[in-house]
Image (tube, rainbow, N blue to C red; front, side, top):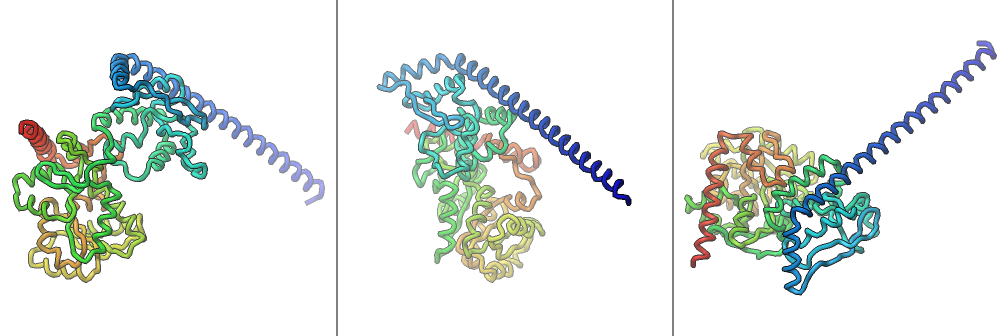
Length: 446
């Protein structure tokens, strides 16, 4: 190739490359501008919605706000202005009443002013967030919320993890439709009452004594039992279990003699409110299992999975290996074995060296099997987990978090298996509620 031709080609390549770079820069700028415009439109739409809804709520609730103000003044209180940190780290004065369940309603005025949004992270006070906690400082990228995701989960008693985790989840998925969905979920959450932090360690509901623990306390209790010298049994009790205990005295005696009895489900929370015995958290086996696996990653304690159809416990063991590789599944066996095969199954559990046994036979069969065979298993703590294996094997999908926040997981389960679940949920839940109300009425009349 001649030098002149080579020079022409190089000049063409440089010009073409320069044009490509300019074109890419213009395209990037156009996309950036479009993105900025979209963000501004979205922010404007969210602000307009905040203004509209805050104005409607303030007008609707004006008589309530006035009555609350008079009540607060009569008790020597009144309107309180608390310094909070808002968007971009700017401070503002959040309005509230000095006391009462609806003390936070005046903060709707802050929403109207633009200090807050209807939905967002919880408003924090100066000094509450450490300067070194850069992840938590992300909350200042948006306005604090009159309603927050953590508030909903606390009232639904499913506030696992930390508030920072909930804030990060909100910030990572924030959208206008998402805010609307959170606001709608706040309506039933308001009916569930406050999230409970302080309550007795032991409570009695409908003839059953419960250990009133949070999820974190329950995990700690299981680990402590797993290292103990004497074996113990843990039972999860939901509304259906309470109904079974009414007609099965043997099962009720079993619960009375168990090492740990935990309240499971929104039904028990509502019964606790009716009977003035607050339940700290909804500690159910399905939510506890991944938390337990996470805790076992740093422990030399194995678990044994017993129950489900052939192949199901193996799938659960694979799930654990993928999500919590540090946790040890010492062994597993399906639940379809005859009475003659019980001995070999017990031998397998003992030889596995597992400290924790999960049995998925269904209530009350699983609890009675554990009671009758616990000493021969060699484990230190055993618990019945119902349909847990079906969820973590992938056989049955779990209800989305937003449905659990509404306290409506039972409806999701009914839709999945209407033939099997209709009597339990529609007849059983009604009977359970009648029993709770009857106990409340009898307590008042005594």
